[in-house]
Image 1 (cartoon, each protein chain N blue to C red):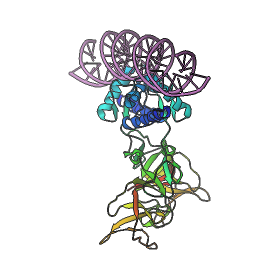
Image 2 (cartoon, each protein chain N blue to C red):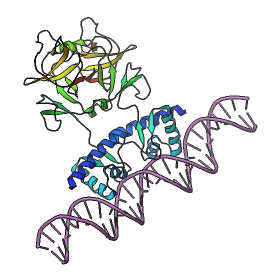
Image 3 (cartoon, each protein chain N blue to C red):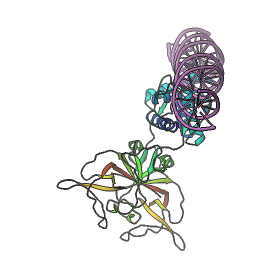
Image 4 (cartoon, rainbow over the protein chains, first blue to last red):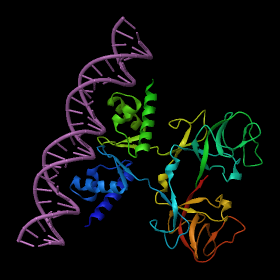
Length: 186
Length: 186
DNA sequence: CTACGGGGTAAACATTTGTTTACATATACA
DNA sequence: TGTATATGTAAACAAATGTTTACCCCGTAG
């Protein structure tokens, strides 16, 4: 059994354990999982993995392992059969981590269908007190939390829906955050 | 300062730490983070949180904390100012982990606008060779990878677009997976 | 054959970390 | 006022865990 092989198994074991338990494994847990009887052997391979940049290791800390964030592959076309997500026609990667510190707002109503945001969709909101002209924002208008497009008029900003059946909101409002994405679950 | 308040801060501290570091905090790290000088105090509150079901605690294990309520909180309404993402008006939580083993397909064309899927959107695809009647699926039709609705006719299955300007695809095709979500980045 | 280096074992060690015990402080309440 | 309960501190303890040292096995180049 080659060194690379063992190292590979250790990497996968770390991923799988973290996936199952919600926290990284200890060295001894890794050793047990892949059938090694020594902690040193595991440590050597882990140092190598860290060197390689596949994991990050925080020295001295229990379970101090950080796995490089898993990315979701974006594919444009699927060649044949199920896509082999390793090296198929991958156009890029989508990293959910860019949505850190964001929250989701469930959209009610049809006021933004012009922007392809429908009733029941969730918008990804990056909290912020400010936004730019033409951004789609989440704002508190009176007692209501609403999703609209922020538009600069001559003298002030207004909240404009993307649906002619809804009125533009003028007057006092408070910006809660900026909409940076849309999620829909089917 | 009330008990509930401290417990709340501990819960948020755990979330934040796990978010930043990739693994859960130790009790002493929590204590330091929220300004407590004793580990016992933290432990009591954590036991309470576990009792309450907000976290899971694995006794005796270093950093043996599993956060039940995971990443992105879904809110329906924002009360005032920025939302307090701990216990306020949270309707639920969206967990991107349910998209494990999925990939994203970038949609080209307008054939599914009736299902509110637009050009440039990404569909979340769960790989599978099979699907049910009326599911939205990704399939290979000839040389093309396409997103359509799977419809049972008298004798066979066809791929039906959600746009009258596009034709229904009949004949041989291979199902790649089922569409379980939509993502749009703004 | 012999020396050497990769890869593993076994065991000892030092820290980190969860748990427990004893005590202090404060607040509500009879 | 006095007491019970809740909350926190301080310290000791035990277990988990990362790190290190010494040694073994084994294939192989010289």
